[in-house]
Structure formats: structure tokens, C-alpha cells
Image (cartoon, rainbow, N blue to C red; front, side, top):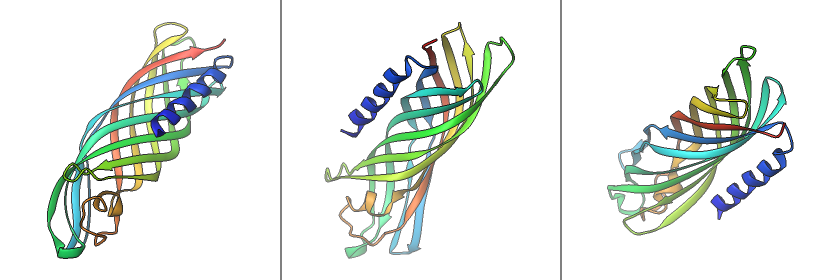
Length: 216
């Protein structure tokens, strides 16, 4: 349901934007591995890796000034997180490869810079929002969700093929504050609440996409 809501929100915003000076962006990015861990003592700890995988998304970008924009952006990633953890009743050491889904909903702004009548337009900016996470334990089929604060920044460029269509190339860093560990993963593992701390997630991404100028 969350995915449907986010898509409907973006589509609705895009329809409003058609009559305005706006752009519709489609993204395809590769997210690299990120390690997370917490150590309280020898009976309460976890460590794991959020594995790299492909992420895709879309955004509606409003050009509020000739060289400044505000963008509403959604991005989805499906991946796994092989994790070793111990804690709770029995202090049992376990290793599980969790199935993870992440949906980002972000809003932020870019500054744009380009030569007059140039085909290449650089940009860079900062984004804030939320990450909606889902974790499934394949060992027992238990599932848990969480919503966390997220932020990111990016640098990239648009290479315009014509007045309406361009190719995007970009790199960005996305972070989920306290996005891994604690009850989110290990509450589904049947080991109790012995490990209650969290570890923030940092995802470096490379990729790009397409951008389309809407309206006039």
C-alpha cells in the first residue's frame, strides 16, 4: 500500500506540474554495500551488510527560478542484509539473510549551472524526508516495518538531446538515521529485545536516468 500511495502522490504532482515550468525525472541507480554493527557486550551485539542492488524511482522537479529547483522524489530498492546477531533469552548466536525493501520519499532543492545555450547542465543539492523499510526473516517468515528520517545529497549533470529530453548522470549519498538493527530486524528473529541499539545506514549510489521538460 505504501508503494501505491507514493506512486499516486508523484503522479498527481506530475499532472499538476504539466501546466507549469517543471520537469519529470526517471531514475535508475546502483546502491553499493553498507556495513552496520552494534556491540554492547559479548552477549548483545549484531553486525551485517546491506547488500548492493539496483534502485529505481521518479521525481517531479519545479523550476522556481532559472537556476534553482524544488523536487519531490520517490525511490525504491529491494535487497538483502546477511546479519549475525546475539541477544535476548538464551543468548543464541544466529545468522540470517534478511529480505529488505526500502522506499524513500524525499523533498529538496538543486542549484543548476550551465553555459548559455549549452547542452550540459550541472546540478547539486540536498534532500530531506523519510525512509519506509520492510524486513522479512526467511527463516520464520516474520515481517516487520519501520519509518525513519532520511537525508541525502547529490551531484550530477543533464545532457540535453533536444529542448525537451535529456539524459541524467549523477552520484548521490542517501542516509537512514538509525535504520538498521534493534527491534526492526531482531524483533523478527525470535531472540527477544537484548539488542536494542540501532546503526545508521549510508548508501552511496551511481547512475542516472532521463529528464523531460513539461509545459512551456
